[in-house]
Image (cartoon, rainbow, N blue to C red; front, side):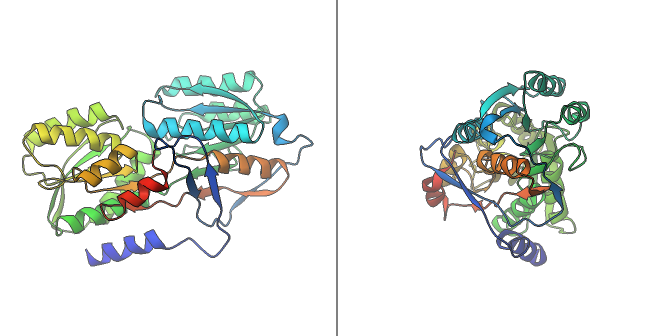
Amino acid sequence: MAVLAALVMVLLVAACAPGSKTEEQASGGAASGASAQQEFLPTHGPYCQGKKTNESLADMTVGFSQSEEETNPFRSTESDSIRSAAKQNGVKLLYANAQSQEPKQLSDIRDLISRGADALIVAPLLESGLQDAFTAAREAGVPVVLIDRQTAGTPCKDYITNIQSNFVRQGQVAAQEIAKLTNNKAKIAVLEGTPGASVTIDRTKGFEDAIKGESGMDIVASQTGNFVRADGQQVMEQLIQANPNINAVYAQNDEMAIGAITALKSAGKTPGKDVKIIGIDGTQDATQAIITGDMNATVTTNPRFGPEAFKVLKEYLAGKKVPQNIRVKDELVTKENAQQYLKKGSY
């Protein structure tokens, strides 16, 4: 486990390589009302070559395809960030929401193109399924920027960049924190996200790879909660009945972690003490739960992609090279830094 801890610490503090770091400020979406800075890791090749156009970004119409309903605070903050950045750039924004339905996202993207979108920002739902939409965009000469999740496609052909967190690293960080909290003796319940989504696949891989070979770290149950609070509660109720010896929960987002807290309390457990709980996203509700002691930690996932997405489009349309992958700098939030994180601007 010492090797695991060392690995994750390196991942947390090290940037990929020397280079310039950009910080973008987004005014929309912070539930606390505070502004929050989005920080991106230095990015170096491979690149996509931009296509210079006589049009400025302000003269264009941009379509935004959101993947899930905005009852999730991550999604509402993400959409607010796109809307705010569009307004700041003088861009007409077209909006569509797939409501967690893959066929609808495919048709949404086609519809955005037919409505006159000159460029697209897409938050993919699943790791595959949008190939036909990318073909339609390419044939129409519409560049695509992916945010939040990866999906199948060829960089520079189907999309020009993907802006997201390092989900594998997030899983590794969560594993390291659970190991520390349980003295390397954990009976773990995993609440997985949307089946087939790249974020679910990567957060699972990172966590499982990190505990592989650690005899005291055992996953005793793993089931999807669909990134939904109510589902997380329902699944946790079932898992704790079948496995009363669970002493740790790895929830692949904070909404499911909050649901698990409710379920554990109903079962007579003391979350945060009897059962250690780690989530991912860094929402305001999760941060407050950390402060009160119901939750132990969360790995942040900043959803304010708007400024960087429009920056990439502007550079691409100016004929500049843009990196195919841009990664968000995330952090671990615990009781020690939760108040500071709230002041920075949670969501």
